[in-house]
Length: 271
Image (tube, rainbow, N blue to C red; front, side, top):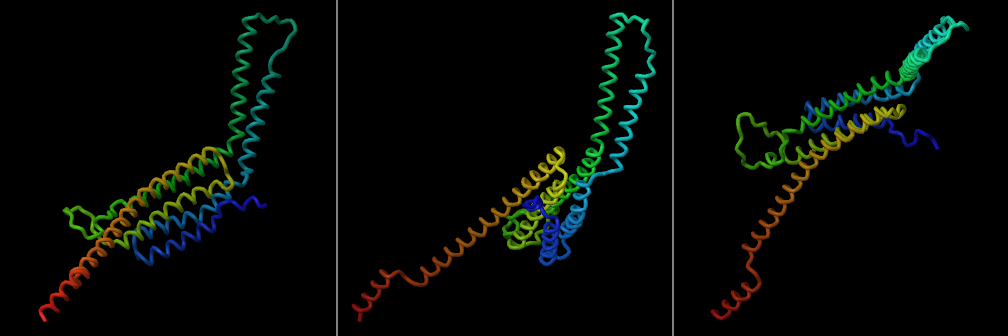
């Protein structure tokens, strides 16, 4: 079984975003949400390239690390040979303790330096990856700003006390529901782009950052779906009100069977 079978495919994410961009432009031409989708689409095109870069070894950085490690080890060996070893010198116990303490401290510093060089490539990639994840985190907040003033109550045409600073009502109930759906889809795709960076680079810090982005987009999408449910409840209430009005009109226009029977009997007696 191929290892890439269950990996997120960047090309499919890019195609989904391209189609979503067309849908937004067809429904809301020239809107700010469409521009945000276009920016996210551009980021998705770079996501595959960045993900592949994170998975490739950086040989030049590895060579730098190996050279630095070789210099550290050479300095250690050189220091060992520079010591003037003589058989006649006697070493007192306090001097021996001080020498061992200095040797241990130096050994710890050398091991820390070697570890730093060994992890240099991973930390360099991590910094690049976290920068890309931060870009997605920012665009998720931009998407949330676009739906912030979209109030379901105002789209119903209900009377409310507006002020000069109140946002203009430009969307009806259907258009608002579609707008909120598009925002929710954009947030979901933002989380998917973040997951693309883990295809070839499963660094623990990167995994934690991607999980934070997915949690953020899920929480923001939950707020949007609350508005959609409010719109749905308004539509259901309006439908029930229309059905009740129709039933009442039918009752008024046509009397019940019992009333019709009494009226017919009275007409026959009078005749």
